[in-house]
Amino acid sequence: MSWGLLYDSTRCIGCGACSAACKEQNALSLPIEKQTTAYTWTVVEKRGGHFTRRLCMHCESPTCVSVCPVGAMQKTAAGPVTYAADKCIGCRYCIQACPFQVPKYQWDRPVPVVGKCIMCEPRIAGGKATACATVCPTGATRFGDREDLVAEARKRIDAEPGRYVDHIYGLQEAGGTSVLMLSAVPFGQLGLPENLPDEPLPLLTWRVLSHLPDVVGVAAVFLYGVRWITQRREYVRQNEGGDAPVEPPSPAHGGGRS
Amino acid sequence: MRSRWGGWPGSLALPGMVSAALVFLPNVVASATASAPDSTPATSGIPIKLPADHVYRHGVGRDSSVTFSHQTHVSLAGGQCTICHPQPYPMLRPAPVPHHGEMNAGGSCGMCHDGKNAFGVKDTAGCQACHSGIRTQAMAVSGTTAAPTARPIPKPHAYPKGADSPGRVTFRHQTHSQGTSTCTSCHPKPFRMAAVTPPPGGAMHEKDSCGGCHDGKKSFATDDPDACERCHRETGAGK
Image (cartoon, rainbow over the protein chains, first blue to last red):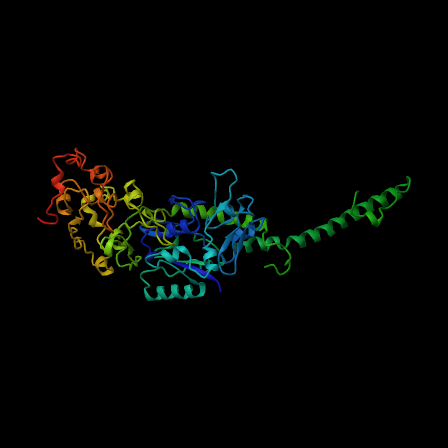
């Protein structure tokens, strides 16, 4: 079972309870900033008269996990993309890689690490809903099985087509995310990227990189062949030219020095 | 995706970097163009489920308990949970019992109840604005703002006559709750509310008891030889 969150922008009143509960749950320092930082993992923003929550989308195939050279970011089977600060070397690849600009850096610390929403992974492991969903007074943020949330989102759109744009954000974006969103306006107006492909982003580079071993192998054989031919030509030219005969290269150190 | 190179570690730096470069630039453009001018969002019609009332037990017979209602404290138009949460009041575990000491110093309830933003916690004429007993959820939901039933002024205390006392003393709240004195002038220190404090004896009724006010300045002094009978009336509980 994979857990997820459904955020319904049309039900949000911008009270900030989610931010407050997040601070408490994750023992983050106050105050609650206007935008997400390494110490504020979720905020409610108001754009064009519509509220929108900023939090980690918890991709099904996260780019941050793909790029992390030490495996500090992990996608768990339960849904959250977790972060182990003790493994982190502070390279900030994840910050560059995230299509939603979620991971934030502790710029004010001498030995900084990254901060981002971890979907209350300890709470989920303890059988509880995320802190934000627990305290939300309007049910704008709902916690549940992702499959159920998709069905719920679809039901809401079908029941009130005028209230929502006919799209569940996160169902397909970047290969799907554990956090799903509903909105009354196109998601671009909420500051979410609308140009993401429907396939997992790590796949983009995988298509190229998975062929690299083949290319290297073929190139090695080809270049060795070229070298052998040119050396052979040189050998033949010198021998038939009439001077002292030159030993041909032995196969034992064929690919070595020339 | 890793069918051919299943042994490769999950954290491949390079593929992610390249894909990040592919998505990063358009992403920035999208977020830059998305900020539109703010306007007040329509929040009407959204069902709001606020947490239940908190009852802080206090006093004799619970009639001075404090019932905190989210309903009366949250303005639904611009409700900001973050004013009180998570500091000083946590949301995910039981809220600490607020004490008057920290409130008076501007913490806890006193953050807002400072006499400017809301009636002050030191505003002792209005103790019952908070200490109004256990109110029902229904009262809170209906928005009842009428003052709850006032706590009756306690009955006179007739202290027994001491061995060397010139006469019995009857303390009357009625005569002592006039003027500038308020409940908190005497409660809970030096006189507890939950039980009758024994009569002060010794060095002319002690500075930290009746003598705290009856010092010759705020009120007639306890060691004024002409004033004994103002308290020690032979007739006791009469009048």
